[in-house]
Image (cartoon, rainbow, N blue to C red; front, top):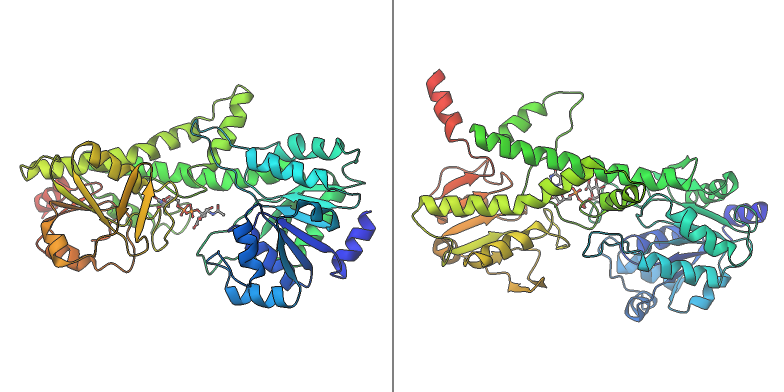
Length: 449
Ligand code: SAJ
């Protein structure tokens, strides 16, 4: 089986599948097709399948022309017909792994994809799970599903895990040039999975097991969550000491070794960092171990929106204004700079907390024309002089590059800057409050001169 599969991969005659055509699956399907394979994309969404077969793309990182060319030349086809998965020699599963409201893993998509794949599985197939998940998923969920069909994993069929490392909007690091970690249930599983990814990804990194591959991804993103939380706590520390946290981080970042810059902010958003570490925390709870770093990081990061709202409240108080009835303009609501993605954005928490205090909240975000989430439904207001002058406070939550912060500082009366976006502006009309204000440090400088 292994020799046959390796031969088909080598000669590009293997029929490759991608299960789940989202921001991970579609770019991967395109790379496989560009490598010369015939690729079948499977998705449960009729809309997505029709779009792709019509030569269009719903993923910003994949151009419609790329899809159209591959569909026209018969290299790429999409389907909702799960019975066709039996045609495939190899397939990658890239379906969502969100968190339930209880912050526990929601494995429903992986379970459903596993059943679909197992139902149509046949000897000789290679199946790779890419969805970010807790260590043990491949061995505990996918392997038994294949064995229930009477297959021996490692000889009849091959099974591996390979974490996705797609960073939407990142033009420097793409599916093709981002190193790909792969861990199979057996050495032969790893070998065929490495061969498949090596056909279209520049660097493939084999590890000894699916658990090692599953944990690699969780380490990567837990590393970020913990370090972001650490600088968020440093911002609070600096605030209490009257030191500008941004100045301290910039100075620390001059250290050419042993330091990595992270920046504080109003909390963390996105589909990875706030969620992935909880998959590991959940798994370790089943083994009676408390992952204290993950839990503490999550606690600190999720307290940042309230910290920001307290800053707004204190700043309005200094102007003898109550939050209640104040007009607050939130500037930038996507979960990070220069993208339009709102998932888990801390701006949602900031807005709802301000509304709970009775503020009249509006927002401006050049990338997010309107949104309706968690009971909040708003449209982006134009960033006019009138809007800026009318605002009792402007809160910079996400620092999109396209916004003119000098104009904001010139026109607004009060700016709470959670991203250091105003660090290079000249003095304007606005009183600027930083995430970690530094009344004392200006005095301290005066004292030393
Ligand atoms: N954030 C901070 N301070 C920081 C870095 C991020 O507050 O120093 C906030 C961001 O504003 C955002 C959240 O954390 O709300 C997550 O930011 P992120 O830079 O980690 O961006 P993501 O969520 O798009 O993370 C993705 C991840 N990619 C994958 O999981 C494949 C992550 O591993 C990447 O390192 C990251 O992109 C990246 O570097 O862009």
